[in-house]
Length: 282
Image 1 (cartoon, rainbow, N blue to C red):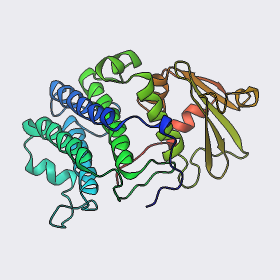
Image 2 (cartoon, rainbow, N blue to C red; image 1 turned 135 degrees about the vertical axis):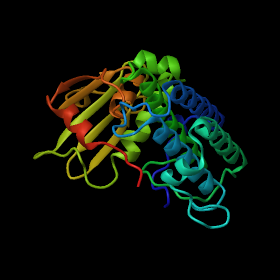
Image 3 (cartoon, rainbow, N blue to C red; image 1 turned 60 degrees about the vertical axis):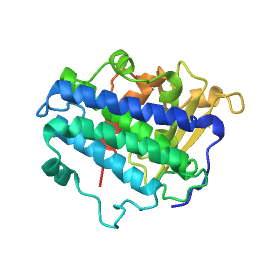
């Protein structure tokens, strides 16, 4: 799927930064899930246990690696990748954590070996070129699921401070993930958060020079603000909904892994978001 609107370089982290983040998040996930125990519930992923979480993440890493190596989501022999259930039957529960770390390491190697002009599938709007797309997507995929691992260990949703202590969730990383979510994910297809009349949402972190203005009608159109070129002006601040907090708090909250967002405007907006904005593996 071709990229329609490549991002400015300023909106994307460097490749080696993504590689390090993938590896460190996978290690955090593995440690946290192991500490929780294989049958521990994952409070942020209802109906999943720790082994489900590990198997899912390991499968996604291998699926991404297959695209980076030109196998289009299949094995090198051209067969479909095993399902999560199949991996759970073949990888012993006490080996899943190491299997996830090994898959992340292979993904990092595939990113290093992929050419800068890689031709591969991408599936989000406003996406960077394929190699950076997969590096960015797997960084935030793994980071979010590492938060799930922390939740399994704690037995509850972690606070922003607990999540940032466990992960390399610095403001620039969180802002990069917000950009992917708000310009890449929720702008695909019909708006799940639409109402009877069009409205606007301003997402404004307190610790980075960036914000996002969402125009919600039948679809969502998102404009990135900040950085000097397109400031957050008075009309933007008059949005129907204004979401504020640190970049990490907004990142976690809008991925439904945190509840430290301050919301002004439409009183039921966050409830609507939490019900409708969920990314599911199909």
